[in-house]
Length: 348
Image 1 (cartoon, one colour):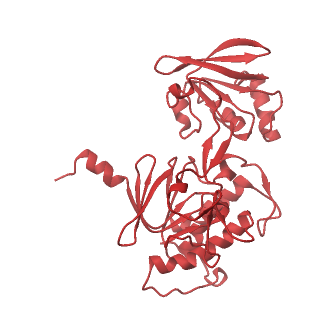
Image 2: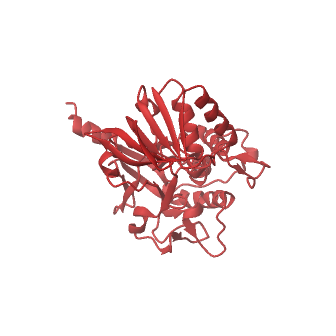
Image 3: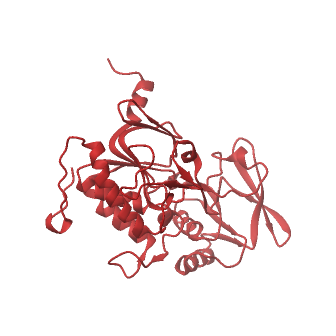
């Protein structure tokens, strides 16, 4: 007898793994590699729609200078390299969802539920959430909430949603520039980019592309302006733009304000962890928390002498994985091997 559709949906949304990593930034990704060497399976959850954390969402083209072996590497390239490095271990991803609840059962397993109801079960939880849960900075407009998910998006999850639609993007950083360029390439029927200033803070190459597309009529570039009001019935239909003390109407199916992300501790504050201000206190022996089986690595943790560097997070991920092995395989014998003598990295 086949399960009912509601039961089937529940089965599909139940994910089991050895280690559940909350946060898919560089430290979370590297933790997959270190755990994979010890034959532990990993699944990652992140509120952002793609892996990489701040490196992908906020400054993908920012150069980083303190990664060993790379005199200089762009943040986005670092994420690409980490994703390639963990491919043999086939990690799973739950993206675009925020962890809301963590409950430890009597058998020692952790039951983790996200904002969209996706359920995860794991033997170990690793919090690698950077500075916390990133929430979009929202414009100060009175009736904003009425049109959220009805024409107003803060994160682009599926670009094809905007196929043949009139899209207005606000912002002056890399995300606003890059998405304007991308959507203008035979996806949206019309792309407008609204920015409060004449100059942009994004990468010069992207600025040059936007200006060129504006000249070609593929992007409606509106500078020294901002959206001051939104209107519509069931869905967004119209934006009111203020420029040079004058207000004009701009027809829109979607408005995407890309004003960056604001870090907040969010639900983590309610999980019973020992906190020091907005960070999780850990034992530097293995970066474990006060709850057995839960670890915290990267910028989210704190301890005497803590350095908020990606390099430090990589070190913490390595030690955490050695300790986590005891929870995942309590009767297993761990054999530490240098990757230089393995010959090749084997997955599962």
